[in-house]
Length: 132
Image 1 (spheres, rainbow, N blue to C red):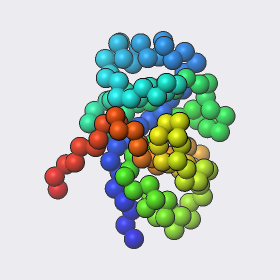
Image 2 (image 1 turned 90 degrees about the vertical axis):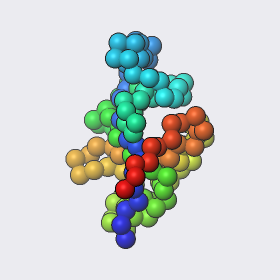
Image 3 (image 1 turned 45 degrees about the horizontal axis):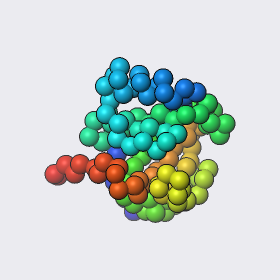
Image 4 (image 1 turned 120 degrees about the vertical axis):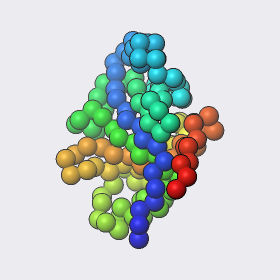
């Protein structure tokens, strides 16, 4: 079985001062705000790349302070595929109502926290389909 495709990527970083970080990414770097989730603001860095800045100290479950989120319209397919490869999930398939996302977490061999997620918020930028 081949893995489902990914549509987008979001790298989440953490800050103790969301306003200061938002000013830097939005005004200094000039990144357009793609989605304001309150405690997380997600900026566009291209048609399929995003940077999420979240108002937290480094999350305790993530020793590296970074979460790489791979966005896919087939989260269930990815869960099935990865389970078939023996990947253990840190957090099982979950609908997280607060952020209107469907997702799960797992780690790579070096301990980096990875997430496969589908945004269900209708304001989230839809992936750009590139013709084959």
